[in-house]
Length: 68
Image (cartoon, rainbow, N blue to C red):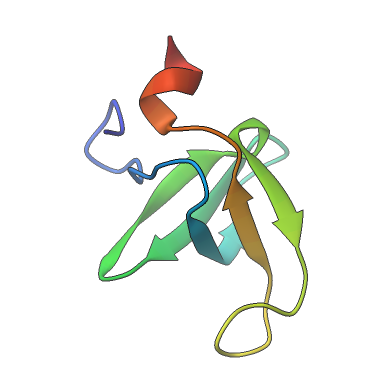
């Protein structure tokens, strides 16, 4: 689970639709009905996988595992 209320929770293998780049280290994304921010270092970027043809980030590990 994300540490802060605005952080997106995910598990390894999830594909997160990227909504915008917050800064060089953080992205905002949507996973199912949930939206929030997450570190770029926790995902691998893919292109053209979103519903609108946008970017998708594939989770490399659970957010809880990466934070530990």
